[in-house]
Every structure is written in C-alpha cells, then in structure tokens.
Amino acid sequence: MEKEKKYGAAECGDCNTCAKCEDTLEQASEMQGFNEAVREAAAIDRNSFEKNLARERKATLAHDTQKGSQHETFTRNAVARPSIAGHEGALLDHDGLTLYTLIIYSENYAGILNQITAVFTRRQVNIESLNVCSSSTPGVHKYTITCYCKQEMAEMLTKQIEKKIDVLQANCFVDDEIFILETSLLKLSTPSVLADQEISRIVRRFDARIVEVNPTYTIVEKTGITADVIELFNQLDSLGCVLQFVRSGRIAITKSCIERLDQYIAQREEDRENA
Image (tube, rainbow, N blue to C red):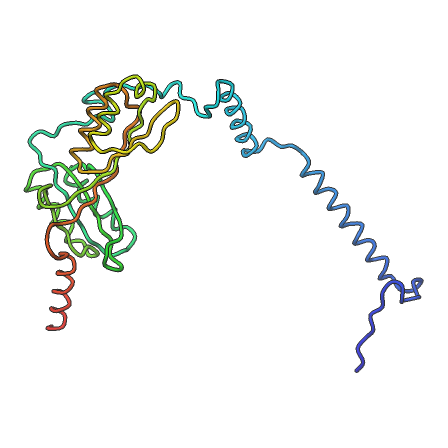
C-alpha cells in the first residue's frame, strides 16, 4: 500500500472542503492565549517566603554597612561573662566519679545508636560526649562514649551493651589506658584580645591556632587532650574574653599492639570453622 501523502497548508489547494488548517490556527491561538495568561500570573509580585527572606537579608546588610565595612553585628549576644557553676553551659565537677570511655563496635544498621543510649537511660547515667564513625573494618561502626560513673557501673554498662544482637564488642577504659584527642573552638572578643596581651600569650602557650579574625570576634582552635582543652577555656574565661565555647566528642584508640575487634573476629571465625 502506498503511504498517504501529507500536504502542507500551501500544497492542499482545497481549503473550502478541508478544515485542518482552521483547527491548527485555533490551537495556536489557544496556546498563545494560555502563554499570555501564564506571563500575566508570573508578573504579579506575590509575598512569598523566599522574597520576604531576601528583603530581610537586604535590609540587614544595609543596616550593617552603615556602620562601616563590617557585615555582621552583635548587640545582644556579644557578652563575655565567666561560667557559673550550676548554670547551663558550666563545667561541673563530678566528685568521687571517674570518667570512663566506652569503645563499642557494631554492625552498620539503623537504630543501633538508640539501643545503646537506652542502656545509659535505664541506668540513669549521663553521657558526656558521643562520637560515631566508621571503623577500619568494612561494615562496622565505632562508638566512643564517655560518662562519669563508678567502676561497677561502667562494667555493667559494657556487659549490657555487648548483649545487643548487632553489637560485636564493647570495652571500657580510663584515660591512662587509651590515647585520646578532642577539638575545640573558642570565640573571643577581638577588642579584648587587642587590649590584653595576656590572651595572646595564653593562646600561644597552649599551642592553639587562630583561624579567623574580624573586628568583632576572633576564633581560636585547640586540639589536644581533654585536660588541656578545658584548662585553655578556664584561663581565657577568667579574663572575660570568651563569647562562645564548643568542643567535639572524644576520639580514642587503645594502647594494645593489635586491634581488639580484629582479634575477636578472628577468634569467632576459628570457632565457626571448628564447629
């Protein structure tokens, strides 16, 4: 069969009987009207969330630039004050309790962190810091948790956590049995730093590093053991120059020659082959 020939508008020659051209023109006119309606609707300036946010940012930037080249101002929060025991954010003492570090290895499944922290909740033990990362063993995650408690409680927590199905191994240590490291950031008042040279001496004495300086604040980074991080904060806080202070969770490795998890996995594989 021969294929039907398709004619254009100039080749048909029988516009009196064929209505295809009229249909095409009607569709084109409808589409043009639709496009015009869309353009009119898009031209309307509506109060959207993004536009309001852009206006607020523009107004804030205009207000800040009126006072100079500084683009960030602090009026209410830029207050340096020493920490007070018993208040939020204070470094409280734990008399009669030892800081224990629990190193836990588990399978990489969702919900395990909730199971581990539930053990501390049931025993009414507060977690001081928590760090979670992937270990050197594929598919295994490492949890480093610190808490103040007695030795009996630390051993009980370790045994209860190790009973979880997806937990491979759990051990508790004191600071002398592991290598530990923490990172902290301190925001200092720049006018105070420029006025008091003792602040700069303390920063250099603790081998801290200045990572940001502007007319309002100075950011100092300190990486080291927990005692050095807290001591740096206490000395700077006594001079009344600290605006903010934050430190990361502890990371730790054991002093043993081999990884305990690798030894545990090798022993488990050997028991499985013998069985």
